[in-house]
Image (cartoon, rainbow, N blue to C red):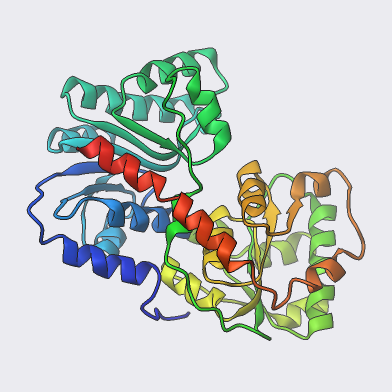
Length: 373
């Protein structure tokens, strides 16, 4: 495990603590996938809290409320309890749906109804509803699209995290299709000193890869690690879903013996600890969207493995090479791809490009402040 070094999100949190002495008594309810042991959502929450006006007293919906309270020093309510969330909203004066894709029916129609219920209750109370860095959909059902379209017409402010979401929402809320890169791009940059460092793996289970696809990917990683003589560190970005991935792969497809010898598992309890690890890495191989973003913000060399279009879009914006796992799953497998990966070792992304994404992501802050006025 790696400790904090005081930069990035830690600096943002310290600044937020100083600002809370202000006179504002605003109490918004912040809804998202918080406290779910996902470092990406933890990073989103840290950025959202930093962007609130001075003196704000947020109430944060969280699954693991204790962890969120300890890490951020905020009050929480149980996000998986609709009645408790409704009661919490009655004590608040704004509703912020923060980050991710909450307005979607892929996970379940019940999940969509849950967030629409909160939005309807907020409108009944005549308090602001802000969609902050949201993704639109996917919405597979005509009923879902109509309900979300009606809700969009009544929100106080909205910012989208990608151009596709903004274009889809334009039909329902003309003129409100503002979008910007993911807010986590605005995390203060780290100082990379990982030349010659280890290879860090942030992979997850994905339906795109069968046994043959995983075996090919592991063979490429084995060749890369052997040619560069580097250790391989397996970092679970989602504590509950990604932990033990190497063990599961060993049991199901088998990990090459050389790669097995070079591999070890590491952990990070916070985005800051992950960034600390990235700053000392020679290369980060990221499937998780926010692993990609935090590695790039840390200044680390990074390759993207796209299981979802959002990962490929983020990689393209930062001029980071990416591998489309859907193509791998369909049989497109270069036996010597590791040689191209080798060129990315100790080759950080363009810092000016990363700064530009961070500056563009500040639009989400302006949207939030506008909605809370």
